[in-house]
Image (cartoon, rainbow, N blue to C red; front, side, top):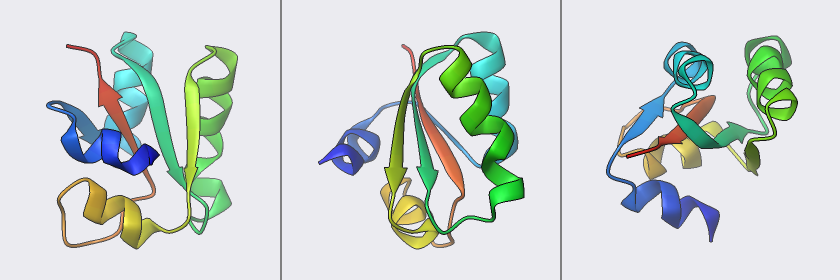
Length: 83
């Protein structure tokens, strides 16, 4: 399952701002987006990820994405950072 990759990743960005920074720096190839996140929050992340040809994985919920990141709150976006 895709979330397993995120759970076991050594380095990750969590949240929209941190994920956007990682994408802009070219520090990631895989981006996770919660399907239940508000569209206006994740729109730019999805757009940039697609433009750059990054792997874009949709996750069922913000809660599931947050848990996969090891936090106790939901997360709209996250990314696995390149080593």
